[in-house]
Image (cartoon, rainbow, N blue to C red; front, side, top):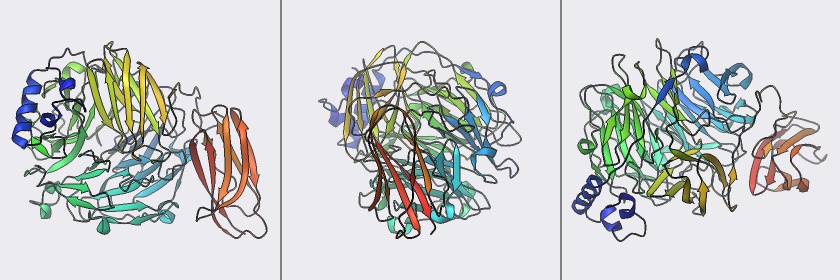
Length: 611
């Protein structure tokens, strides 16, 4: 029996794969898994720390984020060392250079990093959690520049141990909201108001119940189009919360959540540190891996029954090794064979972390040593294709006194496809979008997510295609409910898909060596440059760059969304442009927004006029 064929959306066996009755579903899953066969390719990692990573960072949170829109993922690391603070490394076509001092990121240190474009202006923003001082929200200004907007945005987060953060559009209004976890108190959920400000909504949304929250993760676990929220309870760090259990907050679709962990089959007594949602068996829904920080307790694996309910399949999956202390985890297809693998970090110096290759039969095998993974006191694992060769690379944060490690993925002949999404009606980062790729006998499913707390965000979504040279069908379901379908997409490349626009654009990447030293690099997506001066009391210079020919609309709006002035409109060719806004004498002081619309995409900049 073919695993993909059994679980096709229109297949006659869907009721078994999606388990109308739990007992029947368990039997169906077991039968399907034992009948799968696959040929695996080698997983290979090269330790390139000494060549690529200057300054010997020892970090806590890690995020890959393109800060300058050149289509190369840059590296952001948060350390607990006040002197080192939060550090930004610019990716120059696979080589790294530290640019923290020029970036405007001024944070004494941090735990976790969340990335996302909260104001839909085309530049990634950052939220950095902290221990003992205020967590900070940084607005991306473009060209690798950031501004601290924590106070004006209304994101005031204090706490002894703010652990994790992530962006997600939980109310599907096209704006990214923000969740911040706390080990010693109530978590915070901030709803994005769309005017550069956030409103605390933890209590009204139903997620204020305190627990020892380390990592967490937003994911649509039941396929209803709304992002649910899983919050572990690591009571080993706070004994007061022992026995409380994890929270599986189901998104009710009306701006509120309901904890349904017990009803949906998630019951255990573990002190859980991290959660990862991923499709382990290519059946089109997300399963859960929970890591346990308590020695001799082991991790947990819950298989999704298709309706957002789960059963404990840890033993069959061979994921319950109790002989260590596990911390972070990430899911990715390291060998590009079309099946999602796992990496689980081990916090003891004497042990290898777990690099678990998916056996395509419901189980996983430890291949860390064979793959070339070294030891160390690993905390966070973050995956990207930073050199854009199609094979995934790995960053391991080790905290002091150990130093971090960076590994380059080895090619093994398998093919791949990476997909970058830009939302228009949905949030621009496309967090919450689902992507299904069919290629030969493979059918894979991924969701765009904002990380699982200590790092991550929405970089390109990676699909391994095995020996197939074409993706027969790519189907994207956007958070807005819109669907994009692409057929016969060639393998071994990255493509960009914009919501509402047919087709796709191949992504080639910029050849710029330093966009922090110059602002004349033409981006691969339209860029609205930071206005100058800002704030201003005379005229403001407004500049933008176009990647190609197209229709342009450039206008100024006030705080309530009314158009103040149309600056430019018409067809333009690729290049850099500049115009001026001189407010009329009757125009009052206040906050205004410049909007650039180009070929179906929009970018925004905030202006402060002081009369």
